[in-house]
Length: 331
Image (tube, rainbow, N blue to C red; front, side, top):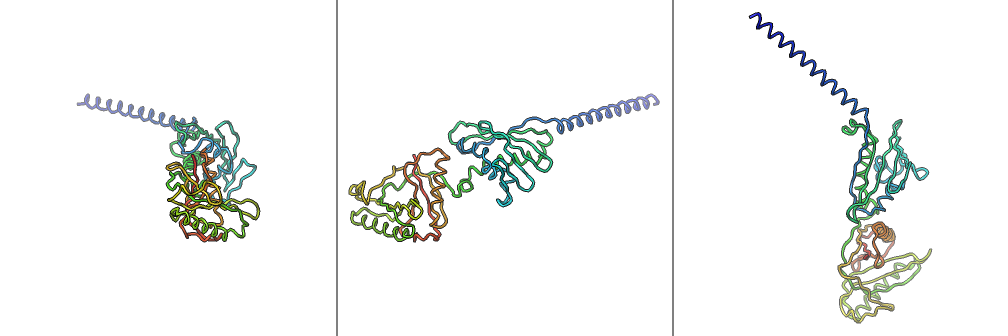
């Protein structure tokens, strides 16, 4: 019995010793891992694919006014709380971003929050398609912060990468209007134009449309109730009025030139389309936005932009609130 008891005691001591050694090994391993995870830094990359031309993406990471619109926390701040200095710095509520290097398709930002500073790199890259390209965020971080997001500067940089994608792909945020591309359906119009004084715009528009409708009636051209309009300033006190109405019949009797002329758009070709709700007097802002969208997306214009509206839906008062769609023929 004594021998058995001694043997069990020896086994217990051996097991206890092994457990202590195992615990020591685990403790050392955990300590080593924590030290590695908190003290050793490495490079990390995050990439998103964005539906936008490469040049547009490059501009977004290169110019401070653009950066302020998508980089967090500036994108979430009120514009009155954001200060832009020297064309390369943004400051808001103790956070500062400074562009410290532009190199090819890359930009390096230095972000400062209180006493903490860190550099992050944004790089644009080509994708397999012409319509989408990539933006890659590169930064140095330790494993602990990478896993648990304990570095606020890096965390905001990661959020900003996604914010850039959301911003660029939301045309209303970028251009002020919801803009897309559709196909031509109405193809034939009766057109006339006139330059008038700004003070005579309303009266002149009504007369132009009355004249178009009367001419269409004389030619039995099948006026379909659609009106088309484009406005362009020609000086300080005058404006160029481009007016059309949709027609469907006796098109061969309408001349291609003259006071009243036939205009066509190729069926099923492309149109930039935009939703507009605002005052009639600010339609030029819609046309400017569509032109910028065309330029940003490397599209070739086929004709002037215009709005389309039904017969008597607009009174042509500058302060009148209207809701229409804008169109811009492109190749």
